[in-house]
Image (cartoon, rainbow, N blue to C red; front, side, top):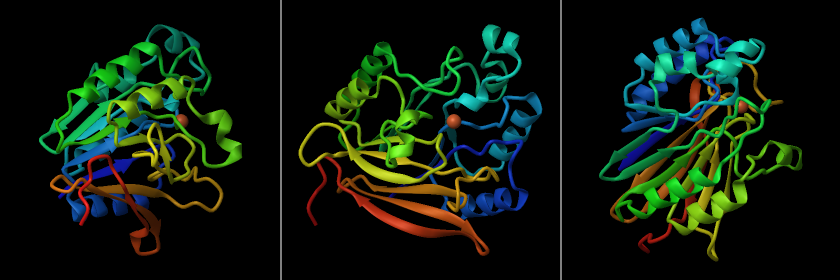
Length: 265
Ligand SMILES: [Fe+2]
């Protein structure tokens, strides 16, 4: 079994210390092969906030692949926003804003949906659509194929329609046709799973995560993370939402997502 832990929107600078500790304990317990971090690592892209994030990342028990969120670009410092928007982010995560992680049973492709010229909206360009689609076509049949970006490709609530990423229609159509299984996102601090893309029934899924450790929760939705479990021999995949509560992180919801090429059993 391959296990992937999705952590999103920790917004270091607004983190709750006991939730951070609970998440580290949960990560150790579930022993994932990879941890995917879908942006808004910090609240205001400050150096100290990235340092706090780095200290957290160093305590995680698996390799981490990350993409930036709109909060990882300076908001008030217009000079920094214009001249070197990702400087502090890159101190922690290195030069690539669109990294890739591959194992025999897993392919994670990062997409940078942030744009310094936009306030908080995200965008996917044609070049990104094509690059990711081309990479997906070279995936192995056994791999769980994940595309990760910060902004959602599909809204669940009417209120969130203004928060979905620009360029989503072309991106979802191309990536789904090229074999994407899951498109991971964050940004709106609301966890949900929806079928998207081409095919009937649809075999590509939008998987949204809540905020992992920030006190900036949305309404009564608590801190949460997603645990993705994948059996490469059958292509069976389960996405679990784990919410933070008095006893630490506990499983709130378990969704079996049907993938292309899954074996009946
Ligand atoms: Fe965001």
